[in-house]
Image 1 (cartoon, each protein chain N blue to C red):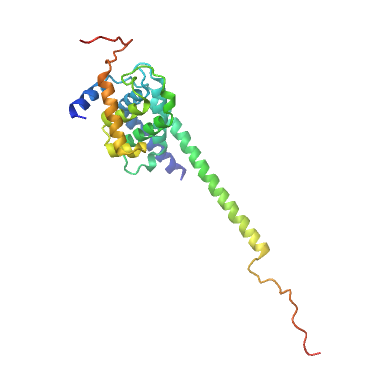
Image 2 (image 1 turned 90 degrees about the vertical axis):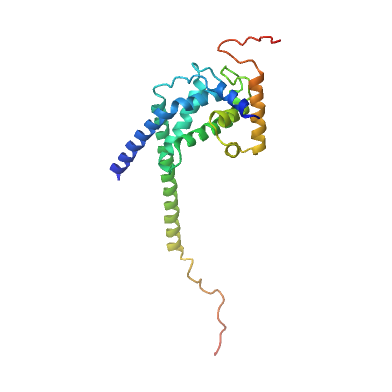
Length: 158
Length: 81
């Protein structure tokens, strides 16, 4: 019994490690987009991802064929949505002009390519609302000045 | 919203990926293992509680024997004297 448990534990640790090695880069980028932090200084994104990954690790034996990446992304989105008010203060990043909800929808829909209905189900919103938020966020992204690294300068365009 | 617009924003999101800290996976696994241990412990406690309740009920039933019909408190009518 003990030995079987140890074997299962080792297998889980090995599989999880391989999963993290492959997926952490993309997930951390998504997480950093959500928290609107600069890429080189993203403590909150790291914390968010570590917590989501820990949950995936705990659920590893019960995934039953479900993609661990999907599961982690779902947990990441849920955690971000629950604590969205923490992320009000903008620290930088590409999406700093958007609200946390707009960032969440934009990252899920455009960066991760999650279908509209699925995004709506995950966030507990009607699909039309998700589309509206996505449209608004996209418009805001295109209208504003493209934020370069460093202070944003307003450039008057003729 | 046109596809072109979406593609444009998609490109804006494709900034260079932040470096992944070397210990991210290890820390997540440790935290996940802790979560798992806590879950197992909670389940064990729940089973223990269930067993205790079952034992308590069995002891009570054995002592009290609620299935035995209590002796009638009404005296039978006196006849034949």
